[in-house]
Length: 430
Image 1 (spheres, rainbow, N blue to C red):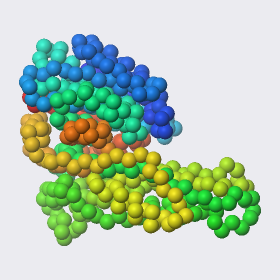
Image 2 (image 1 turned 90 degrees about the vertical axis):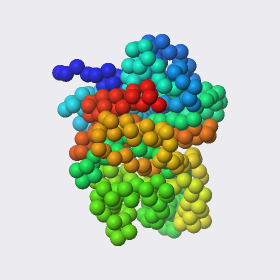
Image 3 (image 1 turned 45 degrees about the vertical axis):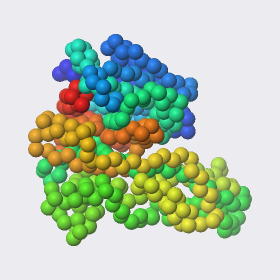
Image 4 (image 1 turned 180 degrees about the vertical axis):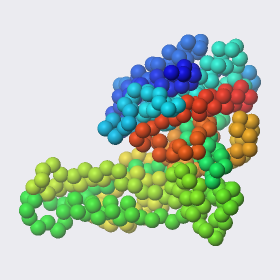
């Protein structure tokens, strides 16, 4: 077996920590993963700080001194992952197995690959006696997969001084390559949709399962959930998505006005798995709960809805949902977070484009609005502008969007090494 690179070794080790975030405040293994990261940072001679927002919910931060007085850059990742049902996987999701030139396991792309790239880049820079160009605030947050309430938001709210002097941040889900009809391009994440996690509750009389109950809470809820899940929200392009669709149309030779924006995005292949949802609001039912026995009609039924709106449209969407479900359904906002849309310009963006051009000549870099969210939402409260830049040059046949929270999550080893080289150059020169 070929020896693993340092980045691949770090990523494999991190995948082997089952740091699963179950939501609702429940998590396993974040403290152990944070302890591993802390030990790696301390071996570099860095002074670390651990923050435990609740038992076992541990984040680790450090600061690296730069050569210049330029504003600091926040380099951040998260150590938690979503659950994985091993029954559906080809491998043990927490074994960190290397097969066919890829690292397999939960977190391999979301986002222990970037965590490993961050650590390997810092080891390379500091181990060779060099310094990054500017101060780095390096953070490995807990709880990102549940909105960062016990991770990035907790730290930003209680310890804003840790980010003093920082103006920009980079993190996950951007800088990866996509195949556009045989031409490789890179997507730089310049924004994120807003997040609203809502809970629906329907109520009715409790009764014997044999009775005729016309206001059955389960039926009322099911009808509302179906209306929400089938709601076809209209396309509305932001500055970012308009620029992306226009560039995709130019590269693919499709006129968005004639063919329609959806058609242009679908022609982008697997990249459409990320992009299609950014053209409109989405409202996806994710959890249903009701009842406790086959022959008892319950008096309450609940559903969880994952709502992702375009930046600034949260209240308008909630108002429309209230009309859609009607007065018999209660809607509670369980968690909400802001949308972000940052400019596809400026020194950091220009540097990223230039570096990707050096490492992969001829591949264009396009902006995109992420359908999900990152810890950049929390940092935005401090005025820090966050971008998604975890650079990965990927094979054309890898359905990268399907890896996120999917079965058989995996990342090519060569992509990890490519990303580390690009990230190291960025930290040394920006």
